[in-house]
Length: 422
Image (tube, rainbow, N blue to C red; front, side, top):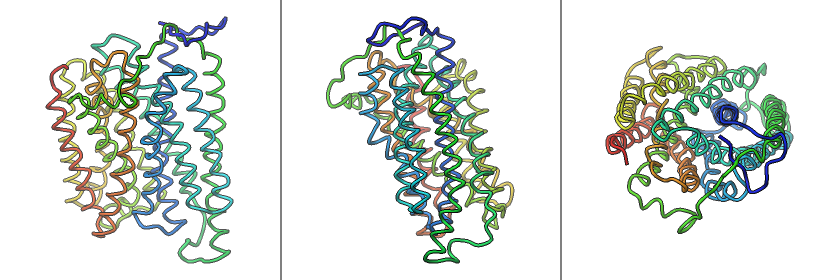
């Protein structure tokens, strides 16, 4: 299968369906890994700038606010310049965000770190607007749930690999003091020195993104017959009038919020004495189990979804997530810690299944639907911030997890509602 933009394909830049699928899998790997690095950065910045949970969750707020701001404009951009050029635009924007960590570290300014994360996330949004509908087009409609879940498996490979090495690099500090023991010039110097690990990590990512963007640019004219329907209403927001799509968009908001809330607090949760009492770096390495569970679950789920109603599977795993949260918050020790990490397995099929159930029968308006769904990912900004506020107000991370549990309850109801084809 080949698709081309409005320009005639250049000689030698043809790309067939298997190659295109591999390209899309690579995009899922990249933006998944970069997003999951926030779980490692949060405890690092929390210590460097002596933040409470609410302030620390501004990392996720700024990152996921990009989905609200860039989602619909990103969809418009992709419709105007095409999928492949859109992917290049997203990758270059991500690279710019990575480079902004340099002045953020040199000035030891938390606000600049947040700005860098927003720019980085803006690129991720554009890449995601490209990847989700593109993988849906590369095969039969009846296997789209399975195919997108399989692609999300590569997303989970990134979310598993990046946090582990990020924890080694970013949380492996040799400092013998902490930020709350310093002030003035000494504090600024400490923050600059300790944040260099973050800078080095993101400079490496920027270099990799530059290479990928260059390769994709070589195939910018490789898609033939690409077409997009004109939006009706305000940038396609009329799609929210469709009950199934509107309910699904809400569930994307809640799912991303719940998943990000739990991932963001894993390190702090596992460091608690009554849970596992781990050191920061050791707790950071275990984030890989949370995201690794999602990786395993997505590959398994891609097969399960071929034989069982996607809606029923979605309802079942959402109920499973609630059960694991209840076990974790009502037990201690390793059982408490690992039951929280196991929620990654139940999260596995949620995003791709909600996405495809909500977007069934959108046809040529797939780009509009993808843009709105990406706006709904703004839940990753709101729910974690509210979870952090509950933790600060109650002094208990366990009580704060009531909010993600509520999100999963709504998702279970959507799964049952959408158990039949649109």
